[in-house]
Image 1 (spheres, rainbow, N blue to C red):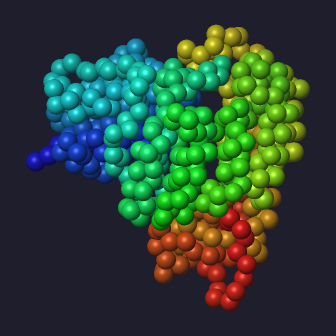
Image 2: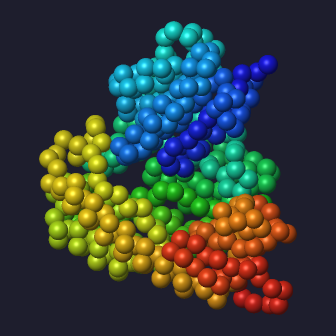
Length: 444
């Protein structure tokens, strides 16, 4: 009987894509994927290191998985990815039962390590590769609708708060022809949407070809209805990319554009590479290129040196832009980054006050923006059953608005026109459109 493997992912879309690479590599070597750790001979947890809270969740989860090994000592438990890279010196002290600690550039060797590894000594492999892109790997895609396609790995930005360059290495891009092959393979497998991934995805380059060339080429692939990408860096958003966003209908009119702070002083300490005026001008150029485009962002409050005036600048800017949604965090130092060596100037209590203030403001803004969709018709790419209850489906609009509606006649992967009748801050609620003609919101 073939060995059975269970893989669990924490963190961003890059981690989800890496888990698919790992599964593809293992299943080609004869492993069988199972959906429960209780069925597995090998349990792998693919991890994130961006925030301390995420790492603590992983430690808790690995502890929960220990009983599977206690019941059967031949079961092997491993940790993969960014946290394995970041915390390699401490993991075995905290989790001595681990059999495997593998960084994000060592997946190629995983089958060999598993084949040779005995039960006594854990395997620790955390070298970062300057050339590793896994371009020759075929992922075992887990979804039905949205295909993750990693366009580039690593990051060269070295923002003072961010650990990514230290756990994923420097930027390197996959060859454009290989990426198109992946898009075509996804289309043939029935995926209707592709998402290009990279820590600074719009810095993609393959010789003389750049991210604009990749988007244009992908838009020519038949069967793919929508193209997204995440996360672009504001400093790398070229006019050529803006032109593609404005001219290619398949490129969705929604962009996640991390801001982090609206204070120039804080942005400079973060070494983000732009001022708030430059960021704001970029939003204006994107709006000018694509009517109805919407934005989401990341915000960090309580960064070392952030004054009350700096924080109020961020509050004011959130009101000004009215992001569709935002990922909001209180700063926590990450070991190995420059900012972690600086003294904390904002107390934990004040960080939480500021965080709750931006959460409350963004919830209000998101609710108002969602309410604007009431009475409009949107095109929804169905993803599956909704949590709302039996007979309800859930999917995303081109603007990445989660939309739920009752239906027993549609399935995942279908595009369905939906009339929006209600909304919350995060969800549109609608009914399948009636047959009579009615204009569908462009790009929705």
